[in-house]
Image (cartoon, rainbow, N blue to C red; front, side, top):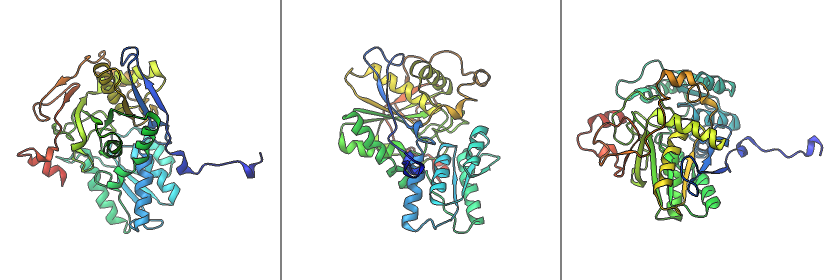
Length: 363
C-alpha cells in the first residue's frame, strides 16, 4: 500500500470506543468484580468527549465564531480536550488553572498549542475554582468575541457523554450499578441519563473527595484533582444518585497502586477513588450484580504525585490499606468526613436550610 492510499483517522476520530476491563482480585473475591471503562485510552482522557462536543455545538449555534478564542477554567483534563478541539476546528485556546496543576501537564498543554494562565490566590469562599472563573471573565473582556464553554453549567457537557453510555450498553448488555467520580457533574449526569432510559432500575453511585462541597460537605483545601469542587456545579444531577462516597487521598493512592500491580491498568486520583468504591460494591452486592465503573484517565500525569514515593510519604499517603468498609452517615451534612464515608441520602446542597455559604459560592 503506497502513501497515497494509506487510510488515516481524523483527529476527532481518535476519541471514543475505549476498552472495557474486568477488575477482580484484590478488589473483590474470586468470581466477583466490576467492569471498568478505560477512558484514559482517549488521547487526553475522558474530557476529550465534552471538549469536542461543546465546541462543535457552540459553532453550530453561532456562539463560537470561526477562529475565535476559547477561554476556560480547568484543573487539567478538560484543558486537553479543549486543546484538541481548538486544533481540530482552528481556535486559539487559553486555559486558566492554578498552582496545583502538575508542571508536566502545563508543559503538555503548551506543547498542544494552548496558552496556560495561572491564578495565584484562591477565592475566599469559592476556592481555586471561583478564582479561575473570575480570571476567565477578565480575560474574556480583554478578547472580544471569545467564548467560554462554562463546563460547570453547560448542558452540552452532559450530552457529550451519550456515546459513552451507548458504548457501555452495547458492551455489557445490562448494567445494574454505575459508579462515577464527580467534579463538574458532566459524565455522571450524561451517562446515567441515557442508561436509565435503557435500565430504569439503574443505581448511580457518586464518588467525591473529602474537602469537596459538591454533596454538602464543607469546602477545604484538597490534594486530589479531577474530582471534587469548592463550588456547586449545576450539571450535577443530584436526583440521579442512589448514594455518594467520599474518599481520602491515601485511600485513592492505595487503590491506584493496587490496580497497577494487579491489572496493568490504572489512573489518577479519580480512578483510585472509583475503584475503591466499585470494589466494595462488588464485595457486598449479590454476586450477579453487573457493576460498571468509569475510569476517567490514565496514570501519566500522576507520576510525580500518586506514583512518587517521596511525594506520597511527604503527604502521609503511604500508611497502609484503607478500611474494608466505609463509615456511614445519614445526612450529607451530619458531620465533616475525613476518611472513606458513604451517605445513602443525596440532596442538592443548595436545598439545605440556611446554607448561605452555598448561595454565595454559586454566584
